[in-house]
Length: 154
Figure 1 (spheres, helix red, strand yellow):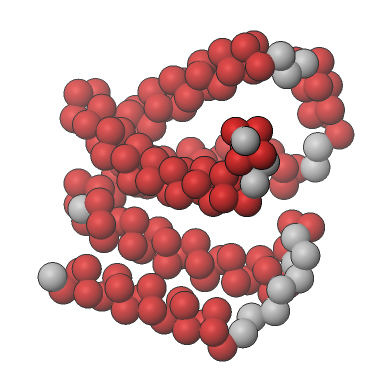
Figure 2: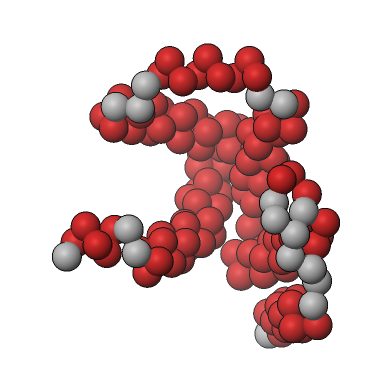
């Protein structure tokens, strides 16, 4: 029974919700670290060091062969951008949370994510299957934008 759940769509939906919940929590905890090291960028650096160590321990415990890293030499330049994008995201979130609050920061982050997802899907960027922009998807962006306005106002 448990094995079936771990391979079901519901399990992946749960993981997605948990990942989403971790983003504002990470920003708040990184903001706490920034107060101790007196720098949002230094706090982001500490976050990445801890994250790197955690991933390394996971790799060792899960048995993922480190020899697979030999494939790095064949990776296109765009594949390397993920680390830069992640660093920007974490540093920006740590910088924005004390100025905008967690709710406003992540409302805007989600709005930005949704806009870019429509562009990536519509044009099939980065090897993603094409999924054209539609009015219901645009309505979703407008609803998120309305939510940002309400959060900002109240």
